[in-house]
Image 1 (tube, rainbow, N blue to C red):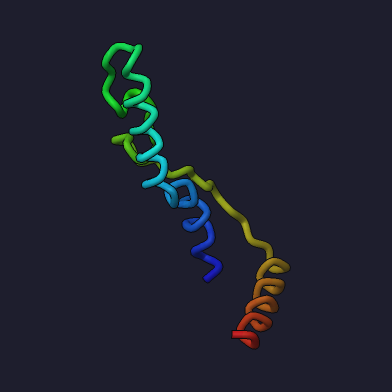
Image 2: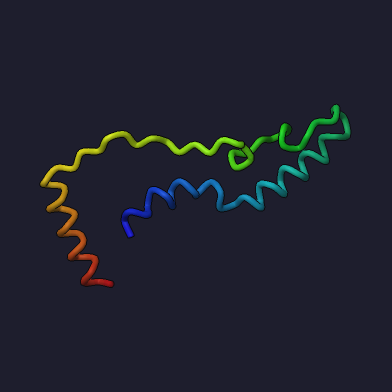
Length: 82
């Protein structure tokens, strides 16, 4: 469960993707009254439209024996409640 937290946090910006797409379309159509024609994905680019999917590198993470003990204690506590 805890190992999925990074992935969940990373995907938070994509939760409202449909709402953002609708907002962009409405703004795009409204702005076309006085502006030159531009492709909609150039008008307001979103991260999910890029061809490059980059994941930030987390680097080397060192875990001390104290961290391991603390996490094992937390695991015991959580398993009692679940």
